[in-house]
Image (cartoon, rainbow, N blue to C red; front, side, top):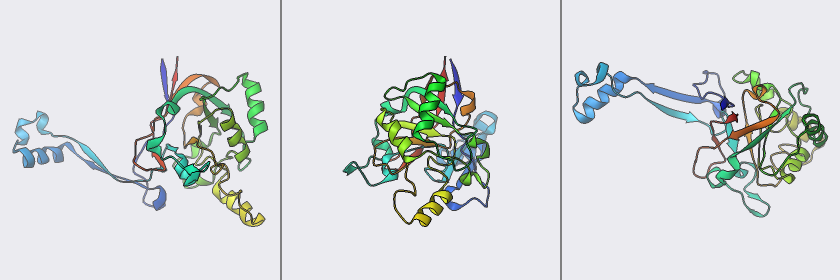
Amino acid sequence: MRIIDLSATIAQTPENTPEFSATDITYHSQAEGAAAIDFLFKVPAALLRRGEGWATETITRLETHGTTHVDAPWHYNSAIGGQRAQTIDELPLEWFFGDGVKFDFHTRAECDPIRVADLEQELRRIQYTLKPMDIVLMQTGRDVFYGQPDYIFKGCGVTAEATRWLYDQGIRVMGIDGWGWDMPLHMQAQKALTENKPGIFWAAHQIDAPYSHMERLMNLAALPSFGFQVACFPLKIKGASAAPARIVAILP
């Protein structure tokens, strides 16, 4: 089999990164590990291979949505379908491993969201019929902007109607290679304020359905339209609205 990494690397972010998406990592060297061993166990560096101890890292800041991640229903609303929304640690693991299907919208214009008709047309093009529990991936090509200051403003997004349509086909996990699943936030905000009504800002997130989506995927261009599996198990963080994940595609 062949494994394609669909995840971004978790790395220290530049100093000018907004706090809500910043990552801070402190690296502790093998020399520091040797000093710790000497302090804790009185074993000097001379008794260690190459005079070195353990290397470790401390992540001092990592927002759960700050890299490739899986959103839980709790992220969207506190209650969904009249019930308390599930957090990331409460979701069934069966959701996060299954057959993958890629929709190719890499030529889609900025802020032109993917609609139901677009999904149906793409399925006809690739000659595939969705089945319950498929994991659907939206290739928009915006992963090339990952790590750049304007990444948050890039993308087309998916409409609420298209998200609900996927849910009604039995899809419980879907993902996109842009900053977010919805149309970019600044465009949503502008439209919501202009029309002065709810149901516009963050509409695809808040469809009142218990589903998960993945954001900030990478390398979807390397995938065929179908014929692969996706493993996207999120970290088990108590009570969290999302969690980073090492998301991969598995090809025969």
